[in-house]
Amino acid sequence: TDTMSMAIGAILRQAGAALERLGTGLQGQYAVVDTLSRHREILNIGAKKPVIGDVTFVAPCANVIGDVQVGKNSGVWFGAVLKGDLSKIRIGENSMIKDRAVLSSSVAGSSITIGNNVLIGQGAVIGAATIEDNATIGMGSTVADGAVVKKGAFVAPGSVVDAKTTVPDGQIFSGAPAKFLRNLTEAEVQSLSRATKAFTELAWKHGQETSKGFLEVEQDKSDRKWRSERSPDYDSSLGTLEKNQRAQVW
Image (cartoon, rainbow, N blue to C red):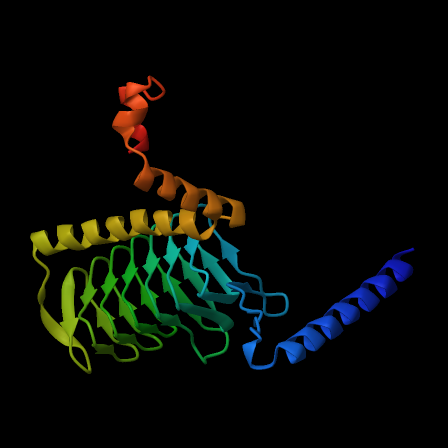
């Protein structure tokens, strides 16, 4: 029975593909060709399978590949790549890997370790390094294999942290190669903490939107159209919408 079902399925698929080619040919220059995207956010490498924590946002165009573990409430943003093929990647909770950041190492058996409440800025490149809790890696920075960024440290945007360099707790390193600039002020520490929390909340919102199915998206469109065309005062005058309900809808 299974063999028969597979054979019939194959015949129907081939017939459908033939009809598609025939229809496209008849339409000529007016044909619209839809290309199926084979992109997948989460990919295995052999037996190496990514593990994604609860309430963790992985953008539709991100890549999480191989031996990767991401803690809960973290975010892997648009265009980011976490490639655990040769190395393993461990990311804690409430950490943000922002847009186009790349976590990868060509050193077999190495580890990339990202702590809790860490912010990896847009376009940053992280090798087999250790980024401890509450640290921030600025946009476009590079952290090479063997480097360590300690708790609460800040790597300025565009900096290059050389191999085996250690950025001490609460310090700002800047430049290429990155060198000590100064200590973070208490106000800056609080500001960075607020930024990480804000991105965590924003990641949750993006996760809610990108996880919606077709029917939910269409319902959202309908709701937006309804709100643009109807006045809450009109419904209220008909007694169909109480004041407290209006506040929730609008």
